[in-house]
Image 1 (cartoon, rainbow, N blue to C red):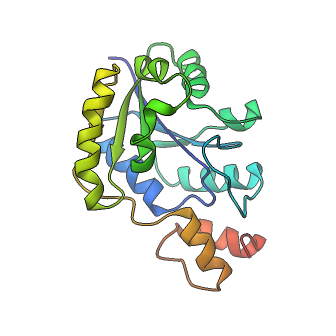
Image 2: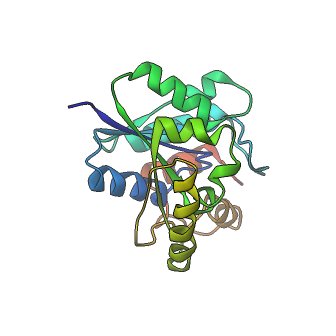
Length: 200
């Protein structure tokens, strides 16, 4: 049996409970051997305020992955420098694990714009796409978009339930405002953010 490996990329600025839930839900649902958690160096799709250095984001990602057998931190995009394109990262993962069955986990907003990414056909050839609604109202548009992606050659799977109820942006705003975010991010991450004075 070939290994089943998924990639979940993101700015992880900071990594939070929804990222972890999403990774673990798919690890369980798809019987994955591991999920590579890949912090983005420079995201091509969005400008980000309060962007903490890559080393800090990778360290926080590692702290979280150390808590779960199926999660593994992956620094491929940080080593490559420049803008992070998923197609390049998947190629690198394919080189590292030539016999593995690859999966790509993306959030709802990314799922709905996949065909606009760099070389989407190549992505679809390399990996099965997994996604979940951020809110329940996303489910129907995502099911519709599955048809579009299927015509482009993508093999996709969409969870029927919402997982992403919080965003990194909201968490940064709350920290800046002095609010308690212990219910939204792993305890180790919260301690590290406070210790380093990040996002203030």
